[in-house]
Image 1 (cartoon, rainbow, N blue to C red):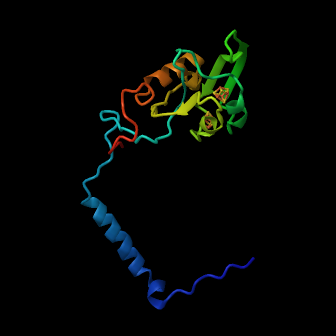
Image 2 (cartoon, helix red, strand yellow; image 1 turned 135 degrees about the horizontal axis):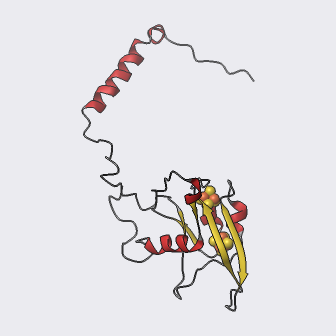
Image 3 (cartoon, rainbow, N blue to C red; image 1 turned 180 degrees about the vertical axis):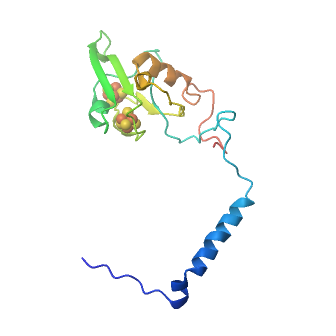
Length: 166
Ligand code: SF4
Ligand code: SF4
């Protein structure tokens, strides 16, 4: 397929208007008062819909909601999730005996949250995941549940759709 290029006008061929436009944009930003956040001295507050690290949630009974169906594990594009199913006397019959997410692989796509039939996994506000050792980025079930408990909206301490977040 042949793509026809638009014909440039004679002044466009000089490139000066484009250069002037670029410089103007640069000068506008010089006097702009919005600076980069001085991390880590200052922390950034993500907006409500920010998709950070996936976390595991507990139900009202305090137990994990996950039924170990493994849909999230199969959908995860970089294979960051590993689940070992266990049996339970509860009506849900199965639970995750082991549940790992490798944050060295996770791309925060949100597929696991989308596919979960139990609303057991949510991408929430945690974004400080860096570490010098990749093995420290493999989080187990208890850590993921603890992260889910810390989520302010999910524990009811903060109202959703907070204005001006981020
Ligand atoms: S957010 Fe995406 S990459 Fe990360 S665990 Fe979920 S499905 Fe996998
Ligand atoms: S999709 Fe939901 S219920 Fe199924 S294994 Fe993943 S977190 Fe658990």
